[in-house]
Amino acid sequence: MFCRSSHVFICQALVTGAIATLPLGSARAQERDRARIPEEHKWDLTAIYPSIGAWRTATDRLIADIPEVRSFRGTLHISAERLADALEMGSRLNKELARAYVYASMLSDEDTRISVHQGMQQEMAQVAARFGAEAAYIEPEILQMDRAVVDRFVAQEPRLSVYRLYLDDIQRRRPHTKSDAEEKLLASASVITSAPSTIFGVFSDADFPYPSVTLSDGNTVRLDSAGYSMYRALPKREDREKVMSSFLGALGTYRGTFGTTMNSQIQADIFVSRAREYGSSLEAALDGPNIPTSVYMRLVEGVNRHLPTFHRYLKLRQKMMGLSELHYYDLYAPLVASVDVTYTPEEAKRLILAGLAPLGPEYAAVITRAFNERWIDLLPSDGKRSGAYSNGGAYDVHPYILMNYNGKYTDVSTLAHELGHTMHSYYSNTTQPFATAGYPIFVAEVASTFNEALLIDHLLKTITDEATKLSLLGNYLEGIKSTVFRQTQFAEFELRTHEMAEKGRPITGEVLDTLYSEITRKYYGHDQGISVVDDYVAHEWAFIPHFYRAYYVFQYATSYTASAALSEKVLAGDASATKRYLAFLGAGGSKYPIELLKDAGVDMTTDEPLELTIQRMNRVMDEMDKLLAGRPSPDR
Image 1 (cartoon, rainbow, N blue to C red):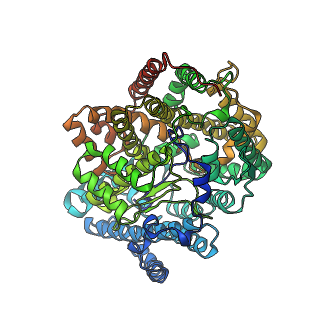
Image 2 (cartoon, rainbow, N blue to C red):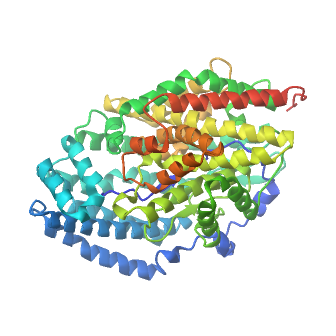
């Protein structure tokens, strides 16, 4: 309870195929000065605090109140009322802390170059650590109570009912909970263990010397994170090869620095796992949400087993692009060169609302509010954090979305994806009390990829143009490639790096390059001649922020397979399936994630979700083969 997730989900280029190729002129003309971007395309943080001064007042009050937590120390066993009072105080302070933290972090993300805002975010990290240290006695003290006493207290005191799962979870994690003093030390250490992620973020978003390249049309473009994600999808092969080799090559120049920060993060993960006496960092990471390590290993083994299906997709891409040899830099280009579509923000809104209509008018009404009430920071600007995320941590307000919208179909799909997170947070926050509103990360990507599935289903039903339909089907395959295969590739890399470090082997930039290249070439069939993975791709790991969040990425893949199973039922018009899905969104963290998904209709401890996803992938490729029959081969 006292480490409640703030519902922050960073979704970096998860959906990469596109029917839209944004013209270079439009990209260059797009305003990058935040002061000149229309207000309707910027989020309104005044809903959290009307000003930085108001945030300062709230933060100072929070800091002054935190020491009150210790007043309950040594007394939790006295009565049910005393235990309830302590948990309610902790929950209240935690909610206020989350709100202040969200405001500071999002303000900093608007422009990572502003040191004052960075300082606010750093201060909140310190406050969070202080709160954690003050509350560190609570779980060890509850553990000293007999289970029967805790159960009796819950039966006697109605206020404890919302903490039932939390109290049960403490008992479950008894072997890994330390003494009062040790828990306080571990809580204080969180500032240090979070440092690698902070350093990576500042270096990659603000200080890294991103390269510029001159394209075939004579225009020079800067390859920051947003620019790289856009320009690597250019239709001209020579351009995208130059973009990818320049960007990844620049990362490679600093592989020593990136390797050091990565090693620091891995060592921090291992430190925490060993301090809590887990058998491995994987076991430690998955024990929090009570997920068996077999789920992680089953995913990696299953995806490796289905690499022939992935290789079928790569061969299909090569055929559609008319290439004699497919390279890694070809994987983000549009499949159908003749399709050149861009979407204004208003068009994106209409498409998304139409696609999500099967979830009902109430769902659509909240989506409309998100657009109209400035929950979304839409457009890229200088210094703005790259990628996209949804943040639902301000419990009493509403969720927020950060985007870097460039007008492609991938941007529309990513916006639908982030709105899925937002709706999950909205339903959880408005249905559950704060103590159970924070849903587990394991289920976090279900709602987002569910939205993507509904969006593309709508487009496939409404578009008759063959080239566009082919491209949409290709985009669907790209979603599976990027979310199931690519994220599992990342998960395998992350697993191997931690295993190496746990055995005492060095983790350097050069070691990470070698390992990343080995795994990537296996997935993309380099040695079988499926897709050439050029040497500079070895540096790509340095571009992935998710590696600074232990064992996070595998959940994109598991969530995708879960949402694939669930969305098919909703799209088939099963009213009960829709009702179960909306109930799942509102269930928050009231149960363990495996149980939440079982209630929704999918069992993640089996191979079925992945197998169904692979079956659907093969059906899509069968349909594309039919559409391609009789079409002239492209010449690129």
